[in-house]
Length: 147
Image 1 (cartoon, rainbow, N blue to C red):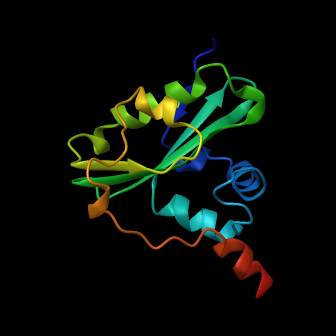
Image 2 (tube, rainbow, N blue to C red; image 1 turned 90 degrees about the horizontal axis):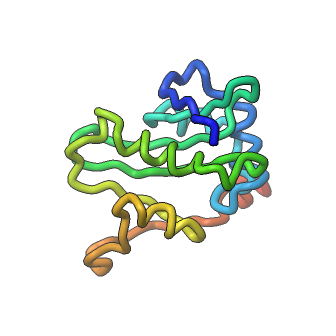
């Protein structure tokens, strides 16, 4: 297995690739506008995963106050590079980042990667009755139809 080089340098991010994946392939963000992806990147601690000679093949971001709370989002490895342990390397690098140490709560949402995240200590909420959300799963498609 090749080692994924992981960087938090925003200038290295392949925003075209990130937007293409999130808008066309990711089940959680189909149709997301590029401007929304750019704002999400600007407001997050971002992690790019790179392979020599291949460029960026993975991405994750954390929205955080850097003190008490973080939300892990948009974690992906491009399909051609899956099954090689890169998602584990990426999540391990995210969780080891100095800005994310000592947070009281780190959350994420997933429909299909529970096994990956469980390896790092993520669990279903201990008290789900205390959590609330406003969920708009089709917001990007609705915005596009009004444009």
